[in-house]
Image (cartoon, rainbow, N blue to C red; front, side, top):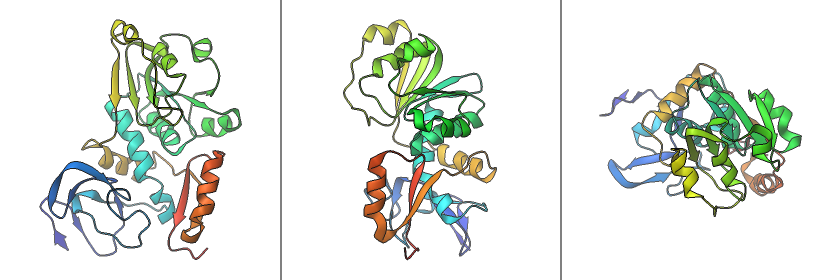
Length: 262
């Protein structure tokens, strides 16, 4: 067994999940974080190297593919909820609820005891409800007509786009808005008066907080969250996975099993 300065210790063949937000490489702390599979290799690798602080031991009966569905999307979701300080007293509205992060937000918010409203397409509403959402709204519906102004405590946004202004209108005074995506368009129009007259807090969420990944590991180990795997592909089938991704008909994650021969 090897001992590390940060108190991580491992035995050969133990299962770990890699924290995707990399703050240390080669024993040096980075000025700006890297992301596993982006600024550093490892996303499609059978073997890779990370600092011990980013390899988190996990005890779970889930398969390797199921566990691999967690780190990126679920840590993003947990980070959003942590930054927005979501609790059992909150009503949370999540956009893009059928995606990898959105479906994770639903489960993780429910694990905190919050009520969840998911925005998605009509064909996916039943699945979103089965994940734990208390209510669903159609993507192109009038948000304010459906739930009214000042009706939710927290907005978790992965979409942005033309309907963005309505998200702030839906927030209660002292509401919290957290964002980690803009798939419907990054440019939005803000009436600054809405921001200051309602005393809103806005959070941009990319770098994971120190407690986020360890808390996610605990939720996985205790069964508070479940993997949502839409389909699994072998490494040579990556083009097929990309085509399915572009159809936007799936819910959850499309997984690449690099050990599968296809």
